[in-house]
Image (cartoon, rainbow, N blue to C red; front, side):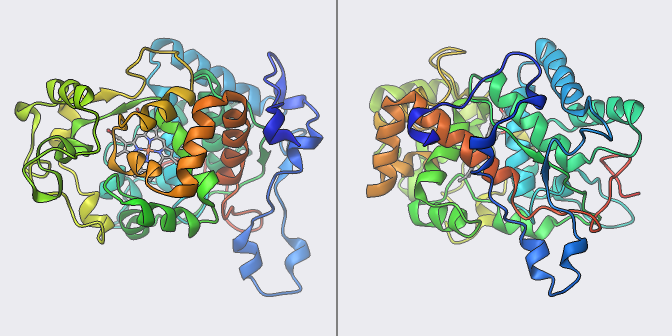
Length: 372
Ligand code: HEM
């Protein structure tokens, strides 16, 4: 039983070649897009495989790894950016790199949908892609690059290693409306958040584990500003915020950083689109490091401990202490780092396998920003 023992190996060198049978057992075969296709032709469809590029591009995983590591040395913020990117790709019509498509020929792109405005890391994917195109032209999909780059980022942020199947293909369409309406909002309450993850097949335990990703990176004031000054139109702070922490947050996010949308009342949780609506001033405010206790201070544990102390940054994060089951998991992860690492790794595998496209569907984009 891997989750309790936390025995996910963290290999030092050539991990793409590792034989990891016990972990691969947990890989879900959730290829809904295939299942939806009625019929006898199914056997012609490919499935994801472990080490899919073994023959066609044996260095693929190592190239992803070395580019991410090299760029991370110069810009550590790429690690959280890539981790967020996999979530925003996979949650919207599956892990198909649809989030990378630029607007073209009057067709809108997911990139421009409100929840994606502050998404970053596209340039890192471009760089990885160009190295892969040099090594093995037309072979490695952008969708695989996203999941592999996110895995590397988790390791760099102090999280667990997890094995991944590969063989995803890239979509030829972008889904801006779905991104706008179906990506969860930072202002979501408990039931809305749980419902949103449940609609993608994640139970409460998995939802709490996934949110552990908020151990790393930066959250701009915009996303929790209303909690500091005007929670639910009360002109007061969110009473669930620890008082000392409130002072700290207010000092980081004072009125001069406010913007028209953030100073407006807390958006209705019934509208993801409205709740996700943010202004450009977002990008100019300093925000708050999620590992505000200090960098490298433990991926996971500290995040859950801070939730238990009323020190969650986003309303939706803090809401994980509002449900009986979710709170139990917050407590478990706050005290058992191995349990968290194993659950997080497993849930990231599941996220990385959501509704994938495999041959003969989709394509290998030559440039991740546009269809071939
Ligand atoms: C209820 C679900 C979630 C909501 C509402 C949410 C919302 C947000 C928001 C508003 C930010 C701040 C962005 C900014 O200030 O620019 C953020 C950052 C981030 N999110 Fe989430 N998130 C959710 C779940 C997840 C999941 C499941 C993952 C990954 C598995 C994730 C990974 C991250 C990371 C790593 C960052 C930091 C990004 C950076 O520093 O560049 N989030 N999220």
